[in-house]
Amino acid sequence: MSSLSIQLPGLNLKNPVMPASGCFGFGREFSQLYDLSGLGAIMIKATTPEPRFGNPTPRVAETPGGMLNAIGLQNPGLEKVFNEELPWLEQFDVPIMANIAGSTEDDYVKVAEQLSKAPNVHALELNISCPNVKTGGIAFGTDPEMAKALTRKVKEVSEVPVYVKLSPNVSDIVKIARAVEEGGADGLTMINTLLGMRIDLMTGQPILANKTGGLSGPSVKPVAIRMIYEVSQRVSIPIIGMGGIQSAEDVIEFFLAGASAAAVGTQNFVDPFICPKIIEELPEMLAKMGADHISELTGRSWKKNERLAYYRP
Amino acid sequence: MIRQENCKIVSNRPIADNIFELVLEGELSAEMAQSGQFVHVKVADGFDPLLRRPISIASINDGSFTIIYRRQGKGTSLLADKSIGISVDVLGPLGNGFPADEAKPGQTAVLVGGGVGVPPMYELAKQLARKGVNVISIIGFQSSNAVFYEKELAEFGEVYVATVDGSYGRKGFVTDILDGLEGQADIVFACGPTPMLRAIENGAYAPKTYLSLEERMGCGIGACFACVCHTKDDPQGFSYKKVCSDGPVFQAGEVVI
Image 1 (tube, chains in turn green, brown):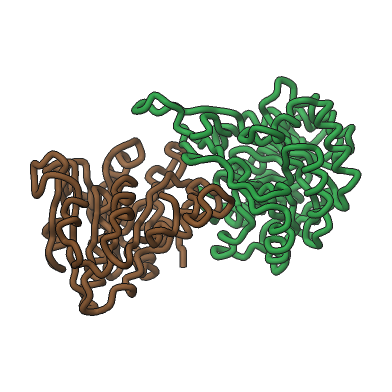
Image 2 (cartoon, each protein chain N blue to C red):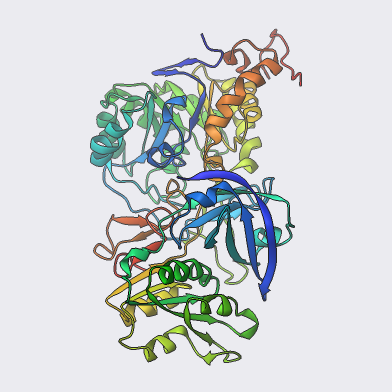
């Protein structure tokens, strides 16, 4: 068995590295650069029942060590994703995690029901944390009761395990995490972006047409690490960690905090080859950490009576 | 094919006020085919600035290529400070450039560049002249100290210069010169600020017009959906084009600009 293979609900991962939703489209662009079968999994772009154009431009603004985006869940809609994008992805030997979104509970249920039937969709990622849409999205992710109810509804119809993507824009993320676990979530993915803004000195106005956007990139990593550290000690479902990952070292840090797999987001925009690079570097990092298998590292920062993990360069 | 390569700086020099010409050595020059394609340049090794900078290709040479940029913000200032011999992380070539084959030998192509929209016109003029197309270049700038590549473009045909303040060439906009060339153009290729492109599209100066658009980009390869625009046949709907990967060059009338 490879030192990197991971078993999670619904997901048989060759390695724990996958591109994060919204940062990889449906894989077509990156397939021109490398073989997608080498990835642990692919989290495809959020899908809503109907096609969406998203927000007006500018949709991105750079920040120190990060970026703001307000794409607004642009996607070709459920039918096209089911009939074109997912069948196209079947040529690759890689499990797909389908990110689902909507404005109402019924929207989520509809998308979950259909996408979970696709043969290569091995898990769903419930997007209750998009900060850039007026209805749905984050509204479901900031209220524990709503989040729980929605998770339950989606679980009822989904034929594959359901992971819930959590928003960091809450005062107590543990409360939301526990609520969706009670609602039947099979796992968590965290964190989505942090709500932010930039203002252009020339115009005196926000740079983004949507005014606010989601902050991502290395500057949010400490927030993600802290939240995974807190949540992983209070739930018994696995966490796929994300938020500013740029290197194999970062992946290890997420595992130590409590993650069982890791997703790379913004860095795909900076270095489109980053996922295969990290996958290649991980075995050497594991050796330096004194671990035989990467799963040994999950939660090492807080687990009692565990062999101490330390870095031996 | 898109490649990522550390390209060595051969030269990096100012050619006008805050305008720099950067020559980079790299195998990816062999992948470059069309003028109007661009490269995505990482100007700093660390986290700040994080994203790459899209810069259009001015000239494809044997084993090297030339890009021209305006020193404006933090990123381009860092690039301007780099000296000969240093390596720069470049991703490219990206996007679809100007379809030079649309201009037939013996026809007249009018190339219009505004400000930092001028650079791709150099490679295009080179390619068109090589195949026997008559090239007329019209380049526009704010003022005389911003003018560049007049002499370089003159190698391939007539060049007209316009400056907004009238300090060099003709006072006014590139479209003022285009108005005077009525009927001469079989095809127009343009790159520059959006208002200029809009005016050229509205002016319908030739049977065929191709425009290179500019938009804030994230990834540059079509994955992040930062630089989308509506299509003309469905201006309020769901159909879209990505400036980075479907463009940046579009035929006039294809997308909403």
